[in-house]
Length: 253
Ligand code: PGA
Image (cartoon, rainbow, N blue to C red; front, side, top):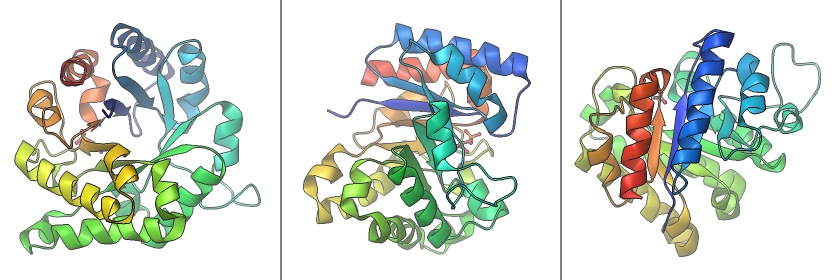
């Protein structure tokens, strides 16, 4: 049985006070719902404060990004090594906002994921198609291409230490959510593609759904056989909403 994982991606939001409040709330949720894993992904500047709050609890603290390089002359970047030194255990890789706005292509995403694994971080690989691609019937091709670019680099052994987040780009921050059936269909596709290489890894890898997950739609999404959790953006900034999503995950878990 795959334990459900819910991660709140705060993106570029929040003051120190808000980060403190949200992290404290998430820590309480993690203690109250021991049958699932709960994580937060604050911006880099809020990581140390959030890690301090998470100390001694089961709350996962993830970074939202990492450099495609090791330590060196890369002004403004944050390396995998710096994250592990800080005590961070997880990192989002290839979020669609990074792919679309910061030019991260499949090769860069594969390099970042490799850097994360080499440093002992657990990457959460984000995949997903745009609306145009979905309407053109290219969803499967796009998602599998994004997945294979990474598998070719790190192998199934690398995927064994990775989680995946399927996030249709058209559903991120738009209020549009994939129907549970639409999401389940892509999750099965991803899992089958991995299972073709290694049935054990395919069966064990966690595939989260992301894209306008809220308290009101979480239960139906998380009830799908192959949806193993949620990557939550906007709703993660609203404590009641985040709590409702985590409770939904806990009851189906
Ligand atoms: P959203 O974002 O929940 O605000 O749609 C999800 C994400 O980008 O991870």
